[in-house]
Length: 292
Image (cartoon, rainbow, N blue to C red; front, side):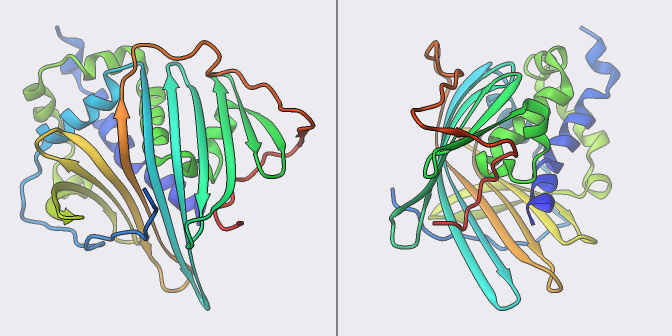
């Protein structure tokens, strides 16, 4: 399940990055609740995609070299004979290049705290600390990015770090400075709905209206959706869902609680110091949402 989720979470970002960065125009001057699934696998074909809003939303995440993100991630899975749900509270402070400190706390159905993890990256290495068992492991940054469970550290964080690394610093600078109408022209050409399977719609979640962008793979049965506030251009939800009756149905939704761009970060934010009696585990520690 995590391999599919990790792959398709990045699909929309990869499509946008490839479409934008290949164009010659750039060479010219509370308590967790279950997931609220808003009509998954509805993929409208007639509505015009508002690429301007999509561009503004991406710019808000990519324009700054550091951010603080608090979110709630809900994972719901159904397998033959079993139904599982897990909720995680996530807080990440990040700074380029590839530095972050992420606290993950899983909450059970009764609202009690379950397993917890601390992830620290200095840009080259990533330390994963299992807070309950007081064990930690170390991997290089690329190994962490390639791990099947890394989406549990925050889908939005992983999505935009992948876009940054794929695009490169110079192209990211262009993304946030090129006039919006030029970028819209690129997207309308390279990411037309009939070519890229990118669709737009309007949906309501928790009483609020959002513009949604959906990427659907009909063959594999995955849908990735971003819910954006049209007034603020802020991404409020990111959702990935699968409907494969032969194997596994799952829905992963991340709700943004707070997103800010601090002027600075603590000097030791990206430094990991093993706590007393912590043991180093040679194999990577897997983030398991269903162990409480």
